[in-house]
Amino acid sequence: MAVLEITGLTKVFGSGRLEVRALDGVSLAVHAGELAALMGPSGSGKTTLLLCVSLILEPTAGAVVFDGDTIYQEGKTLADVRRLRREKIGFVFQSANLIPFLTGRENVLFPLNLVGLNGGEAERRVQELLDYMEISERAHSLPALLSGGEQQRVAIARALANRPKLILADEPTASLDTVRGKKVMEMLKKIARENQTAVITVTHDARMIEGFDTVYHLKDGKLDNI
Amino acid sequence: MDLAIRDLKLHKGRFLATIIGVGLLFTIVLTMNGLYRGNVYEGTALIAHTGPDLWVVERDRGGPFNEQSSMPEFFHYSLAAVPGVEQASPFIYYPVEREIMGETRRFSIVGYDVFSGLGGPRQLTQGRPIKHAHYEMVAHEKLGVKLGDRVPLGLHTFTVVGLTREAVASDGEALVYLSLEDAQEFLFQRDNQEVRNQRERQRRSLTGGGMTPQEAEKLLPRLQPDTHTINAILVKLAPGADPARVAQHIRDWLYFSVFTTQEEIDLVVRGKLARMTAQLGFFRILLMVVAVVIISLVIYTFTMEKIRSIAVMKLIGAPNWVIARMILEESLLMTVSSFGFGLLVIYNIADLFPRKILIMAPDTMATFAVALAGGILASVLGIWQVLKTEPALALGGH
Image 1 (cartoon, one colour):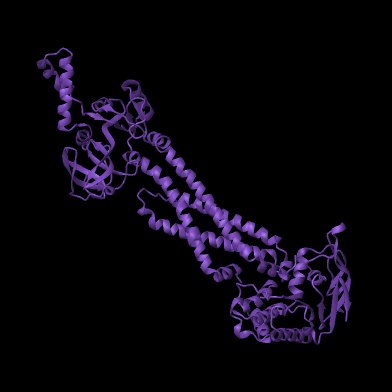
Image 2 (tube, rainbow over the protein chains, first blue to last red):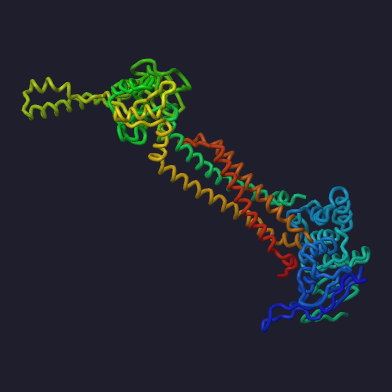
């Protein structure tokens, strides 16, 4: 079963002569352990698609089925959607977007606390993730004292904290040099394979998607997959 | 995990600077409160501490504190004979400016019957009350004299036999207690040259009016100004006497105005002190508003600076209450700490002010409540901003 299944997704901004069709009948499916890349020029609708998939932006038409659950239908409250995001989706951003007043370790602990995991069990999980991302030694520092690559590793550890079904990565290598960027991509691959997590990465850089299972190209809101 | 504490820890420099800045503003607000209360306290302290049952003053006058009152001294004998009056004692109160220990000082003279006991200082910090009819004084510590100092006043030199700090003059300056006779002489007795001049003017007036020099000479001593003048008579009622009835009797038969101590205080508060009290009260409100606005702005700015982090928190699924709690905690911490700092400062510097800063718990509590309400209002604005923040902001979306 697909972790994420999108059918005929359409998003229209404005109306009449000002109408902009940001997404136009986009359909795709991403399965557990699958690495999917989403590419396209600026203004092609990548961010809009990511926002719809992130359960933030309601589409004008089409269906988003996440882990067997149809989103954006009557009866779903904002709290339900937020809980889904909290429990089943991990986010990795262009810049690490760590919470600046929490140390690396606390940034990873935060989503665990949000789902009610505290104390020793949460600490063990944090340590496990930090070890996995090879950042344990620097994890007591505030984000401002970490390098870009270290911040991104903490961000990935945070995204993995609640064992998500899906990781959404928005240009995770954009603020890194090629070597560090490749390293981050390798980590995402490793996560997808080892944890059976579906990963969707938005990227501009074709060099970064070597070894990905599926590559989607968005152009003017329409999708081609390669 | 307490997000507020962690955020403040990261910004501890700014947090401390804010606490000091806003705290000092609270110090000013609390000082204004104290000044407001101190103005009323000092303005009425002598009345309250003297505290007779009735103040008898010149007819249709609100004296002796709110306006001048002048009456012949001998009337206290008439008052003592009024039914219900146990004791009637003459009283003088007069602000002056004289040189004390080489420095020009403003102070007020209180003259009282040192043997009857009404009108004198009740508590001394050092020394003893005036025991002799002449040349002894009790002074407020503010005057800066010491026990045993000899202070020239008018034609005589007085020895400081006691020091007090229980009451001050209505303008906040020191009080100097003298015996009634000394006070009368000091205030009303002209110096010798002035007496000679006055006598010469009267002689010319009399002889110019047709009297022979011999007749004028005989009459002159009778025309000398009378120094047996007082400003009020303090009345102590007999046990069980009805103050209203006694007061009415005095008004009807002796043609004076009569006030209870509370009425005398009200006269001063509504009269002499009213403008300054209103001024200070208005200034106090204005400062409070400024303090609340500044706290609100600081908290709002603190929140707005975190808006991207808040978007990230919302994106990863943090419920609104988690973020709202952080804002509210920061707001309360900042308000309480600033207020605490302000309170600490004012308690340590209040005595350095030249006028009484009377810090009263209800005022402090009310100020704290308003500050807290301001802090909560500011956090509500911040929380409203949090609710409006789109998680999409974290993704660089709209």
